[in-house]
Length: 112
Length: 115
Image (tube, chains in turn purple, blue):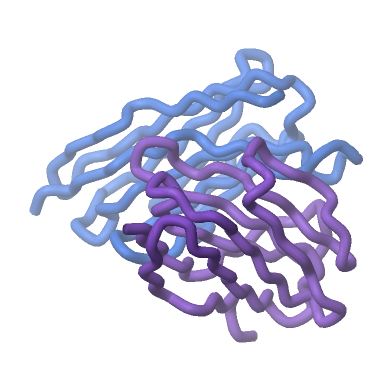
């Protein structure tokens, strides 16, 4: 099976702009989680989607949002970008909500 | 919520030596402990995992041990090779228990294997 894919792989934005990142899970996987990875904070959980519904949310401001489509593909959106949003954004999919997560290659976002 | 501490943050070994990375967790309800390896510029890859009904699991040169009483688990890599150089993350979750299965990750250990 093809692995988790994410697009785009790299993004450069300026402060105040918004960005949308996309994640396609492994075929048959219905749960998608998003993480922010930075050198100082490690892997921080953003949110989890299952059956098009947000099931869990991490401790991030409302500027971070997401959604999941009926085919399990997911998008996350960050509005009013700040310099501190520069990070690697990883999505991970799992077969169900209680199974092992498999990560995508990530989208590296740079905010100038 | 769950808190996972991981040590050391950096580990430097000579090729052929063993490497041990240790993690402690706070929530006694956690019952699933995966380990991920992330090479530079690549995605985290699951390398081994263990569930709380097992004390040890081995896969070739990699082994994980779990002490539920002390709430700590460790990754052991024997006969290290330069390609083992990467950042290793431990995690703890309550998978399959009906609770939140979202894993809490340790801060990572940068393993450097010198040829």
